[in-house]
Structure formats: structure tokens, C-alpha cells
Length: 59
Image (tube, rainbow, N blue to C red):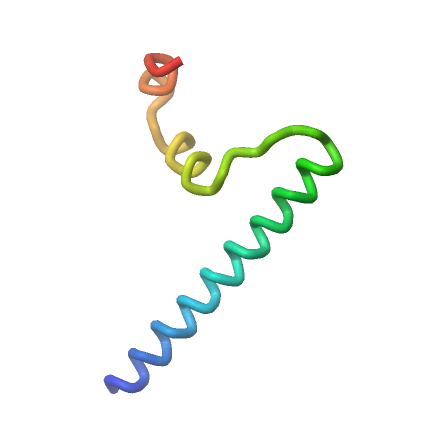
């Protein structure tokens, strides 16, 4: 059972790494084609989760 859990964890880490790499590729493609800078994953995700009033207070 421990081996299975380790394999699943490793698989999950590989999937996340692949997703991150692909996201970066897509971000560069959008920036190159449109000239629009996109937020990094850590910036975009957290900003989207904050309530609108918190984002307004920051701006």
C-alpha cells in the first residue's frame, strides 16, 4: 500500500510539473502574439480568489 501511495504521489507531481511547463509555454505564446503580459500562476490564481472589495482596496 505504501508503494502505491508513493507512486500516486510521484504521478501527481509529474502531472503538476507538466501543467506548469505547458502553462508557461502558453503564457509566452500569448505574450509574443498579443504583446499583453499575463500574470504568473501564483499572482493570477490568488488574485482571482480574493473578494472584489479586497482587490479594490489594493488598487
